[in-house]
View 1: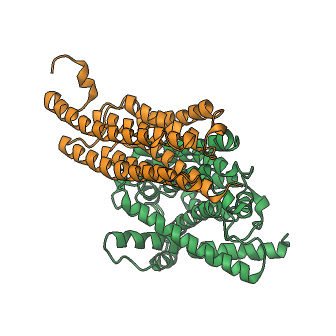
View 2: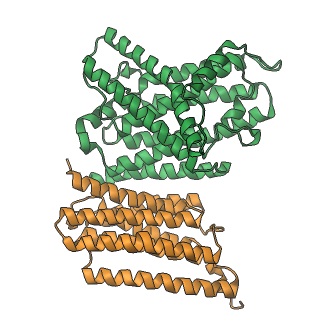
View 3: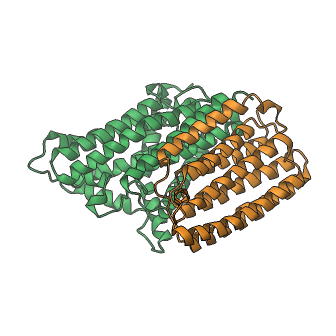
Length: 218
Length: 320
């Protein structure tokens, strides 16, 4: 029988997984942003639990950083971007909602098959954490390649980052404080660059559909 | 083990409880929805008054309808009554648990759905046919996935008997909670909305025939037949909510027959049922009705969650 702390860790990871799957079935981008915030919150809880269970106080700082950046700042920032772009829905996705949902299941199975043999060697004694974080990484990647709107592709990248963060926590209590700090700074820069890029794209092509970038004439 | 006399007494309590509480669960949902719209809303007892009023009225039948229309409400209600003992309500082992497992329960719900759909076609009205077609389409989506969800719940206990699963949960305590359980519960809640025809799948309080699903099927009914159908809707809601409670939060179900333990288990059950109804009402006030074909997205998502829970149990959790 597992202890309560590991149980709570498993549940937080499961919430993050459900949120990742939900990202695949949303067609409203605002709902996608808030689901991303929920997922980040679950991951922050997981990080806090790891810090508590394994007496690794620097992970508390990382968890706080996730809360500040991924739960509050980035969703707020993405919402203002959405408002300035005036896009609300995803249309003409490369994969339909149902296909995406089933792909999400396939990605969990893939993650379980690939990292299953490695999982017992992870630093954190939760069987689900590593497969789930790998699945979140893959789901973010799927979001990145299966949606047309550039803003959704940015969110896909952010979901991938959540997966990487969780995997780092599971494997080594975080990939080192300085590295994580650098990653977080990168995310913020990414979001700002993405905004400038999206605004230029909107001005030039009158759309944020990444397909428009394939044609040479504007 | 319980003697057959005790089993019959417990069964009688279960029937009284479920049949008596079914209307008030609908009342709670309506009340929560009304309050979230800043209305006072009808009294919690209003569904009882509605049922009593309808029960006293005469049923009117279309000239073009056959015996199917007359028999359907009774058959449908009987199927739902037969489903009540399959759910562990407040005592374990469940009285007459040998009668069937959760696959039988899904079959009984399907039977109840089928006869009402048949009756809606019987009178030949356009809306009835439309309602049947939609309801059977949704049923064909939700039933196989409901079975998957049951397997997801049953995997840790190795059984499809609700009583065995709940007993496993009570015995395991906190150890029963797991990531697969969470996935299964989310999937079940999605299917609960489809099966009981709540928002975002179907709006039970709509007056616009074109958007109706279940309501369109029962447009032809009046009087005592309509009362049976509406009561049946309440019983179906109670059975599915009760099953969710027994599978997701089984703690508090009594394993012995002491008066005090049973009374506590009963009080807990009523509180859990009321809480679950309030949650359904809250969920309903937060979502708008979807267009019909989005329902397939919801059931696909439930299937992904259920299969994910099963895969998680066998591939990931078992390896630890």
